[in-house]
Amino acid sequence: MSIRNLVACVLLAVVAVALPAPAAAQESSRERVQFALDLTDRRIEQAEALAMGSDDARVRAELDRAVSLQADAKRAFQGSQLAFANRLTLEARGHADRAIAILKGPDPDGVLAQLERTRDLLERARDRVEECEHTRARALMRTALDMQARADDAARDGRYLAALQLSIGARERARRALRMCNVEENLRDGAERALRRSDQVIQRAHETLDDGAPPAALDALGRAREFQDRATREFLAERWEVCLRLTQTARMFAHRAMRLAAVRP
Figure 1: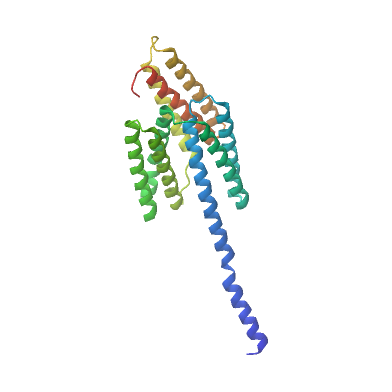
Figure 2: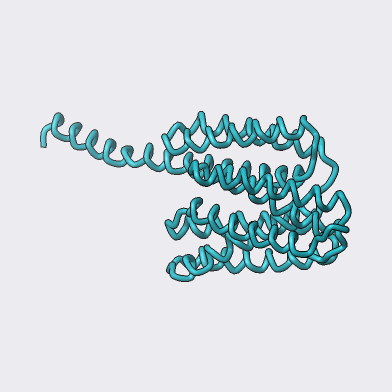
């Protein structure tokens, strides 16, 4: 073999070995950004639960900005703009952190609404993950169910912050399990289920309140209906995530109405 041919063979071998590296690096970068997005989702959900029922304009402004930036980050991620997505999600997380810092503690009714949101997701995800042959995904799903059970226990004991943290952790693991099984969370289905569940809670609140109910309870029920109407409009406009946030707020106010009327939800 001539020197020229030998050099050509060596160069081809080097190129063949080197080519997969960028693809591997790209995949690693996607995983890191996906982790960052998941962490921001969790932080925003914590802030939303804490902010339910709060009239602080600063909190709402920070939270609205966080949600908007996170939506932009996810679009950038889908478009493979990984560095841009990472920068946006970090900025979104900062706004969520500032909202949390303004607030002092979780609202019990907001926590109960978040627990129901997680239960809705687990109910939808369980069968899909069980049909999946991914062992790790099934293990994550079992962990999620266990964490949610502990969250429910904590809420019954009045440990609302612990309940919130456990429930959001359960939700995050369920979503990871779905991704491992290559199953995307159906936001439309989730929004539709959440609307139905909120309708049931609002109806229960309506049936348990009478004309002698405290004004604060009647006001809370009115706000529940208002938020549910807005959620329904967002559903019809196919803005699923906005619909989910609004209907969860509606459910929180319905729980509050029953609590203020001394009716156990």
